[in-house]
Image (cartoon, rainbow, N blue to C red; front, side):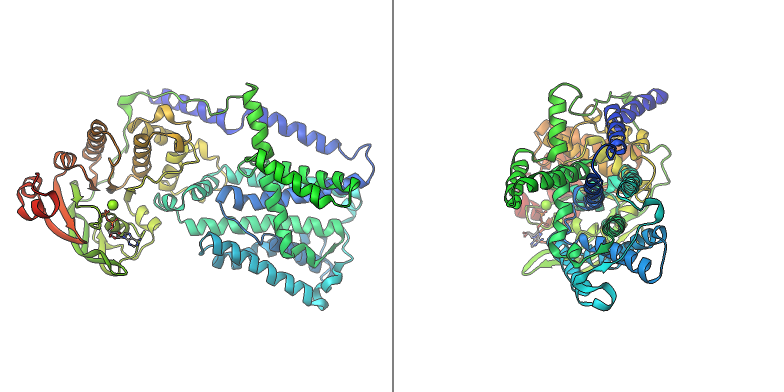
Length: 598
Ligand code: ADP
Ligand code: MG
């Protein structure tokens, strides 16, 4: 049985990693690129080198923009740091070109490291503003510091190494650099680290709640993107023989964004296609009219409107509609149901108090959302928190997982205080949760949603080399099987029905193999029958795996059928606590919350 599972899973995975048509396409394009300078006037080697540099710059930008969802308006700064650093090292320290290439790129990475440490702390808009500001500062420095950078006259007199001195030879050099860089970026993007970036782009809160340090990952990719922008800058500097302040003027940051969006920022090759299209278009239009920016602008608007997923996305749609390739991934087969089991060897589960809250308080201005809550959750219990809307249940959950910080009080998990920890640290200690408003990675496949959570649990997030889809295969399938979603594994999560999305979120949470599972209204929006099924699923998993479950729920029938213990919250405080029968009889509860209908 298990052997069969692996084969089914692996076949689907290997088919999805690199489709054959793509491999063939890459080979053809590479051969074309190698043949290009032959028989063409030398001028075209210059043009083609420009395209290659822009493609590399665009690829590095797309690590941020397309894969991580980070919009930087100052990416040209790192191109500038790379170019200027290499130029200065070559001219002033007489470093050979190879050394200047490496050190220039490293200088750009260091700049990204220092600056990124501030920038990635900020939300999207402020991140964009700060990146822009850094580039403007850099521009001012290179513009004004004439003695070192040559100011507006530029840093001049760079010569490439003898081996690649000459337009055609340099073109091949630039091609080699692009190919190697692209390969590294490709491997990176298909590794667990790369998948984590996509997850962050889709939903940073969810990603943090599978145990990923979102800020750290953002910072790392910012540094990698800076490094490759630096490489592009060095290749640019030696191709022009000079660096000019306008290369880091704030408008220069638009180029890589433009080519990524134009080509398609959700496909790896997008920026390369975009760079070819953009440079060739500028060249062709420029030959016929001096008003080329007008024509260029109009063309870009046309592309943006008619091809929202860029040129590559457009081509893929054509390709799919011509029946050459199925638009989605191959559907995986369901596996043997009986074999689905979450934890192979269940670690010794906690005993005694799993969770203890002491005097937790959280106010939002005048609203006392959580107002001095003390509560103990015992190991192995299914514990419900009920209370009317606005009672503070979700806020309480948010305090438990570091999504919010308490004004006062402490949270003890397994006897240790966790109230001060960020979400990812709480999760990696063995708590998992679902959200009242379902929180999944909507733009990724169902399989990928669970896979990323599995990889995070396996502490593989920083693996930049291994193809992610070869990892965690068994466990991902088992989780999908457990919640009954293996048939939908290849679908985009965002198109699932509401109930299926809730099930997916449960699988994501369970991937963490938690000691404590927090479910915030797990059956909200479900039909009555579906509610009982979902709760029964959770119950059976919890019993079998020895999980402790704390959940909030509206449906009283569900609560009384599922919970071992019930806590009633009202206006941020605990009104009553006890076994279901006690709560059922409690007069205050009936009066305040249930209106006597119990
Ligand atoms: P429940 O989950 O029990 O319905 P919540 O925890 O969502 O209750 O909300 C408790 C109270 O706190 C409500 O009055 C709500 O409006 C308020 N509240 C929750 N989150 C915030 C927030 N981020 N900012 C301000 N008020 C909030
Ligand atoms: Mg709520």
